[in-house]
Length: 257
Image (cartoon, rainbow, N blue to C red; front, side):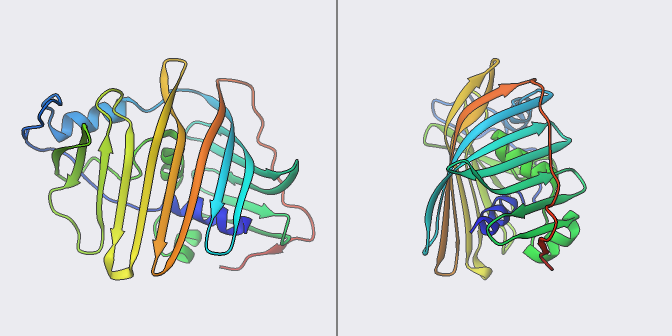
């Protein structure tokens, strides 16, 4: 089960698209901003820090299992991400991600993976990288918002951004909160493959006068299979001394992709 959790969390950061530019439509009570202005403010809302240490409660559910676990999260921004999943004080899995490498092991099955993003992307069938994994943890868009024109509309008192020209099998949109310009929702549909990814940021918290997620709900469907993950940040500390201990235990079996 932990293997599926790790895999899914990596898939979250997997999807590539492009965007930008645009006109100023009528947005009712919202400030009349263009898509480029909204994107620029969203990018400016990216939290600035050197290190982060957090405690996270994760609830994972699929057709077979419902399980809650405590996750320790450590980050050195733009350099490394370290995750340890525990249940009743027992380590279930560890993950270590850098811009060039992904490594993890799980104690339940005594298995591990240690390879680059290209190998993992080939296995998952979608391009992933460090930046996308980091973005979802910080409430930033997983989509590249710098190369394709977007339309802007109002939805639920928020800005909705959508590509002016959607790809046939890659249809996405995102909602941006007009107060702090963080993502409140992202959806990606791949109808030809019967896939849907829905990410909801239900709440944000202010830490050192910056906005970080406090509650995230993730729902992925593929065919008749549904997987949901609820992520609740219990504590976030910035610019603290953190270590990133990681070594694959001896005797573990490598997962061949």
